[in-house]
Amino acid sequence: MNRPQHVDPEWAWSPYSPDAQTPWTRALAAHLYRRAGFAATTQQLDDAVAQSPGEVLQDLMQPGRESQDYANDIDDLARANLATGDPKKMSAWWLYRMLTTPAQLQEKATLFWHGHFATGAEKVEDADLVYGQYRLLREHATGDFGALLHGISRDPAMLIYLDSATNRKSHPNENYAREIMELFALGEGAYTEQDIRELARCFTGWEVRRGKFRFNRYQHDFGEKTVLGTSGKLGGDEGVDVVLAQSTAPQFIVRKLIRFYVCDEPEASDELVAPLAREFRDSGLQVGPVIQRILSSNLFFSSHSRGRKVRSPIELGVGFLRALNGTTGIYELAAGMAQIGQELFYPPNVKGWDGGRTWINSSTLLGRANLIRSLLESDKTRFSGATLEELVDREGLQKPHEIVDWLAELLFAVPVPETVRERVTGVLESNDGDRENRLRNALTVLCTLPEFQLA
Image: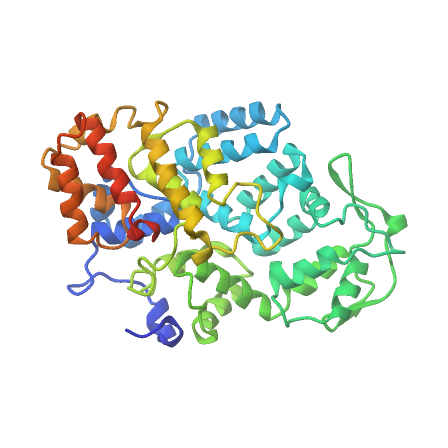
């Protein structure tokens, strides 16, 4: 099989059309749900295979999937957590939304941008500001990248995080100017140190006062600047527009989207990125069509993509629960996520989480297994509002091999080795405790496998 760098771009980005060699199966539907969102339940897989892959994706991308009642409840819950003033409460709140929202794709795309425009609450400290940034990211998650970049450039949480809350013309702060080019829009090598200094002058006078963005004209440098070859009396918004107009911007964003939705490594070749980058530019930097093109492509449903990502802690925990229609103690879940390396609103630095193989080491591997076990043992964890045994009974599963097949379909992106299937079947047939206990033990064995770490 060719490596992704050498895949024909025309074939890669052509729509996947099921045929005898690559039929539309429950396994492919589960793959789509894991990447577009977090996971699919048995019922969602039943519904998915009764439709075409295009219809399923179209449904996932549909705006307004959350009812007004759900939106009201989630807003009320956010306000209750914000009243504590503790950003860590908002981490748990966001996990709750990931677990319960019918808009999985919207929430997953928001998670992508949270890692892209990484802003740490340990420095911002203000729960309202980190929530405000979350809302900005979610609003534009599948929308206009230009509007998102303009918004994040004025976002109080971001300006505080990058020490740009008081940017004076006498001492322009270069942090945001550097990051917007290096990490947010262009990538290394697409600018010079002089461009950073000039762009920083554009942002002078951009301040945060009482938790809100404010332009202080008395601290703004109204002089002539030259940024990336464009000269004029540029202000902050004009500076952002200059960055957005660079030809490297679409390539940079599309490459990150391919990594997020297709595979961790190797990095997509320039030839593979080019067609989507061109479409992204021609659409006026609309994100949704790029995501839709990726998730409907031959490449996405091929072996280049399936099982080619390491589950992030969020994908591990939220995916496990969503696949089994589970709920649990949300604050304990947030703490568990933090222990294995991904606490929402607390990325490690401005580059966000590195992802991929870095999610796994001897410590986090043990922690990931312990997280699943703690979820299974928690008296707050319920599956479709019931015990695991009751869920299995509702699914009409009695024979051990049927239960193993069902769990493998819901939870695994790659085949479970036959020797493991036999071992798990043996656990279910053993006399080790009651049936509920045996089911938990069987799930624990499955979820400690190396194969379970892959998405």
